[in-house]
Length: 119
Image (cartoon, rainbow, N blue to C red; front, side):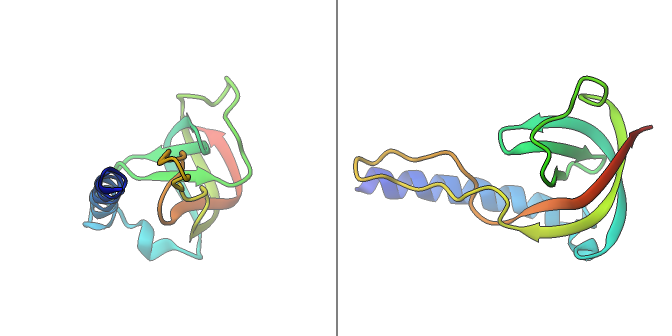
């Protein structure tokens, strides 16, 4: 039981540290939520789907896109859509034997109705 609590505590600390990096002035994303915006960054694939790693280090998921095709993957792109902050990736859970599932605690930035192009 103590091991589960310790593991969850470590996961929470890492996630909070990551969130602090996004919200500490390096990123203006929180001020752009619920607005139509254009972002610039590198197209990457993550376990949760297609993402853009934007120039200041933030990560934004592209809604309903499971992965980039070779034309865009690892390339410099721009994407326009409505930025949301929502629980996009399911939260992890601990089963009765102490196993922890994959997932992400909290909300992620997601670009909805996105249109993208190479830069």
